[in-house]
Image 1 (cartoon, one colour):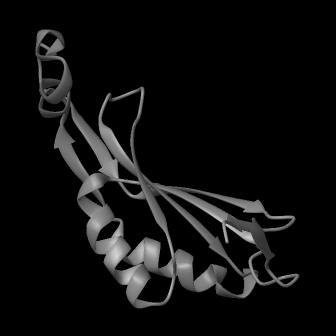
Image 2 (tube, helix red, strand yellow):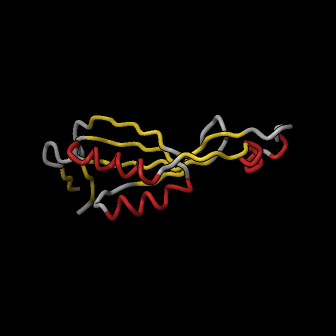
Image 3 (cartoon, helix red, strand yellow):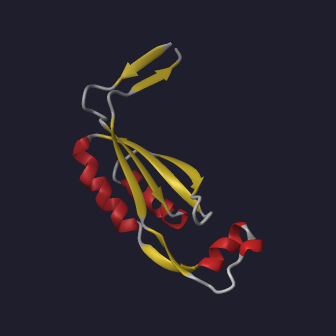
Length: 122
């Protein structure tokens, strides 16, 4: 087995971006076009029981502001009626009166990375 360790500082941030699934495709396309590499995971929030997309990106700190600008440009908040959200997963829990809820945008976690190791086989 061979392994490869990135040069110090090459990737020193792990960005975890939780975004609306409607924004995830255009955002991923934009980021890939800008030279970012990412992994997309489908996820769900507990509060609204609505699907999300979680993007994982390992980046150098020097690209962090570019990444955040792209996320902000693609992930806009919007207002939807809560009964539309609940109807997707639990039709028996529909509220009696529709409630406007803001969805979208992004929640972004930025973590320091000590090192990156790529593992593979010969």
